[in-house]
Image (cartoon, rainbow, N blue to C red; front, side, top):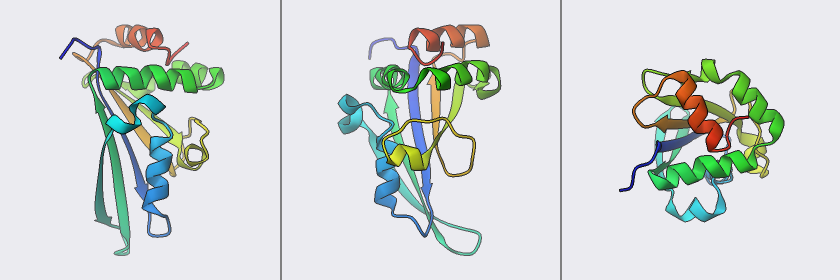
Length: 150
């Protein structure tokens, strides 16, 4: 496999007992650029909630070149305001030790085809892992070049 600076992307969301897992999966896939949707690996796992209610955890993964294409596509889908917010909060969302950037998007908006940052509970979690756990400024540079940050 050719060298990539972004090695893996994981998207995850929970479908609670009152939600349709297929709709939650759709919300998750709406964050994926069209050209990559058929290359996403999706897993579902049924968990048990606090009151013994079923919760389905849906996880989608992309690796290597697909992960890099995802980040570039996500950068194209994000509006400028969300890119500015992500840039301003980058230091608190990036873990230098693991080389991972943690982002949350509104699950409801994603289902409707809108891509919006959100810090509530009903979210799609996106984790972007960079090769070699670069320092903060280098990671910013990589993700700025990919179009995710301003």
